[in-house]
Amino acid sequence: MFKEVIDKYSWDDVLAQIYAKTAADVERALNKPKRDIDDFMALISPAAAPYLERMAQLSNRITQKRFGKTIQLYAPMYLSNECQNICTYCGFSLDNKLRRKTLTGAEMLQEAEYLKSQGFDHVLLVTGEANKTVGVDYLRNAIRTLRPHFANISIEVQPMDQEDYEVLVAEGLYAVLVYQETYHKENYKQYHPKGKKSNYDYRLDTPDRLGRAGIHKIGLGVLIGLEDWRADNFFTALHVSYMERTFWQTKYSISFPRLRPAEGLIEPKVAISDKELVQLICAWRIYNEEIELSVSTRENAVFRDHIIQMGATSISAGSKTNPGGYVVEPESLEQFEIDDSRSVAEVRAMIEYKGYKPVWKDWERFGVAQTV
Image: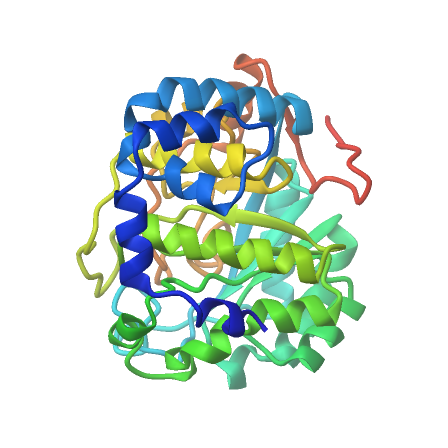
């Protein structure tokens, strides 16, 4: 269990080690053919800031060597904004007294028809955390409804038990995204004061349950802005390292969500600049050549236009963050505001202008990309 690994570390000690890194540590990390977790610590440290251009160039070379000049496109499909948790940063939080919406099977197909018309073959199903409303039975029916229409179905929903994941894998579920939000255990509770999500250890153990359930891909990450982004990403890297050793047949991805405006939103505790986010993404690529790096429409168009040349391999496009947002009910409560509001066609044109090829489904098990 990863808990046994992370319990050996102190948040404050890790933070002190990161900020103690020197230019010599960064140089050593950049010059090594293979980096370890200590090198990652150097690459995300303040000492690495003057090396950003060098890091970006190295990240670009590594990414093209492993993934070629391709960018995977996916779309989120929000199925429900029902939620039984109180989270201080989320528009779906239980204490936001706004109208809730959960899609029926027929409504899912309406949303699917629109996304297919835009070219998507990889869809991410998203719900709030409301087990009675959108539990395993609802999700199983959603996958059954949508599986004939998409090559890849991923979910970002409440953490579940291993047996529940096994049921969904048998239905054709491809990937699960589950973010710890923050690895700062002492402060985790203040952001999640009520609901099942307040159980830090159960959420922390979710990737282990997914690995045992035989899921093809697991997405990890933290919500940037809750706690120090450098320390949180060190612990994310530690988590990925443990998972890759323990469940070596599973693929992994990392996302970089920054706090965005939403109903009931708290202000970020620790801000991250665009340059620092570029540094973080490049550090991940230099540290781990195999991992997929995803940047959503939370980020603005200019940032996303540049980051596809600096390590990102997957982006969303034309996203709606409310259930039925594409066709069924565009005005329903959204989880957060997006920043890149360009159409799918505009994003595709940008990718091609940059000399890259859009990939409309997730990469095949053996690394063969499907392009159009």
